[in-house]
Image (cartoon, helix red, strand yellow):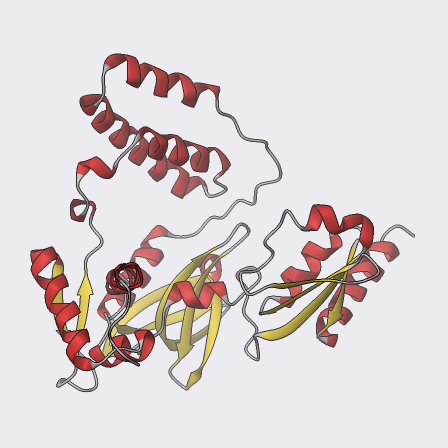
Length: 330
């Protein structure tokens, strides 16, 4: 592919590369940049050189675990990388709204601490009237309440896992009474459970999710591993919720009945979804995603207004959910 691209596209690609370099695991290589953005090695080298000069001490070059001749480039993600001008009143208000809807008490407390710190920074940068207006807006904001799952886990275990992810260290862990070693790749935070994404050392081709609350203990080992180009954000986007079947993702098809089409159009169910409006007024939603069980749970809340057509496994899960619910009333 030719390297002469318009300025806007080039700028967008530069931002994407910077964000990729800020991934917590491993950094990215020249080969990854060339393949992902379809550019020559010479162009990739120029981009990396520019980022190195611009970000200075925040730029780091590390050697690949398995092939030390391969360089991997990464940026740290500390707040000092962004100038204070990036902080706005709207940022504080958005953070406050997230805090009010947060369902994780431990993270909520940390978010509140962050909000207080940022508010103090804003107070130094704004006039008294502007700051009072911001405070009044925050007081006037509320969030609707619903059932909230209590997610309780050992923070020491979480810290050990995060450290192992950053250091690319294999960990020994005990999970549901069984002890084995895994290569930790990332953490997924959900509404009802949090998960460790990892591959077992005796089955390195299969990515699995382990409920963080059910990990009994974790011990780091001296063995290192190469995560390759694994990206926890890309992995998370593949699923409807947080659960990933080992044989997923799947080609999923839903049928939205005519009375529910208007309401369904308000939702983005999955970023891979495609919408087809049918001649009879119904709507078909197709996507490629994992998380069939969570999908069935969600469809249940639509009261039959959206029904699954494929895969058959989803149809069966949905039918069983309906059957069990009806049987419980007898």
